Length: 505
Ligand code: NAD
Image 1 (cartoon, rainbow, N blue to C red):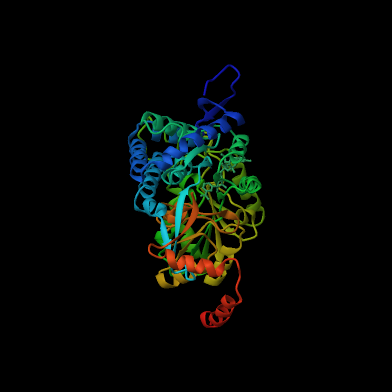
Image 2: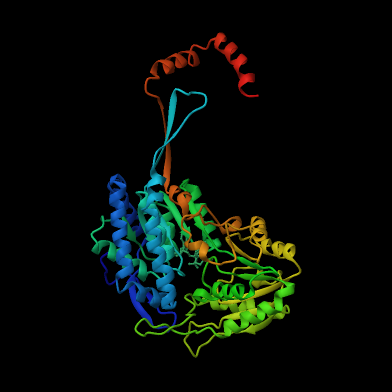
């Protein structure tokens, strides 16, 4: 894109320091539509390539993501997350998703399937899966690589072109990936990035053949309406309010570690994070005590990519999340909850830091229990027993993820069936996101469709069925055709009347 004196610039700020990192041109609706047109021209050749060539291309890019010295620092600077999360979550995920989508599962997802029609055994119905065309991937700010290019990998592997719109808060990693795509000599216009806010997202939804959206419920509803008006498919990966249920027989040390990690990883800005811990009364106090000790030991700070520090908790990427946390904490305190750790910003570290906060005495009716926080607040709710814990866990309009902890694996697996969530971890947290072989998506108001698994790959394909005579069956087919088509004959009906009740008992 040519930058002129009048092109508006979008300033990207390091949330840990508040210092601007880089200004990038904000594109217009017309730019977004032009990108879709270019993608539409480039897509047929990409889809026509043998799968093995697309695999080679996408794996070359994954290798570049794993080795290029700019990737991790860019991720750290624009999101404020520690190096560990940039490298061991975001980069690992993009590479793993590429391995999966371009491996056996990808090949299988695209393979034709033959079905045998019961009524016409002389025919075969071939189910073909073909790329949809141009997929618009719209991403959030919390994972600039994982939920942006990471979500473009599956549609690309299936032969689609992708136009990616990252959040205007964190567009730099996506722009870097687009540059690496070009530097690696991958096919032009098959993967493009457009930068801007909601209006650019709207322009994409108005022009692509399919939308893959990750973000808030409010925006997801708008996207679904706009896609519905055009009758183009859309997949929505929305917010959560994920519970972690800790039963009396759980390994409390492991459970407390998992609660603290899944509550405060990326300062709580993780869609499947533990938003509420519901603990059986018999172990509540011991569990809270351990959580507090672990929380107070967290090393929070600005992980500057130019320095070599070991830190656990970084900055809040999007400042309004801190206001949300403050509002929920104040409401909970007013209603009787107690801040057992944290509870306020940490300006002495930088403008984007909020202390990891443990809230105790929380009840299911408080805002912090009912709404998504998406920030570093871990509310602990006491439950009398397992039944009450499950009931509280399900008292939400969200249904993204859940976790259940018990020393009795069989009982936990049974209770997992009763939790209203797209995925449930037993005696673990967050790892479901990296089990890319299995589908992951929200139920209730947490989304439509899934990412991951062969299901997640196939949704980027159109289904086409081709019905054809089997070899050597042309004569039977012609005979059947003569009796089923015009002119209708009573004697065919008489045969049918004899057959029907015998066939469908
Ligand atoms: P958001 O809804 O504000 O924005 C998401 C994206 O949509 C951005 O790129 C934004 O510019 C774009 N957008 C805004 N208005 C649009 C419109 N009218 N049409 C099309 N696009 C539009 O969400 P956010 O604040 O960036 O992300 C945080 C939310 O994302 C949280 O609720 C979190 O739980 C959710 N999330 C979910 C998952 C998941 O897998 N389910 C993963 C990560 C984040």
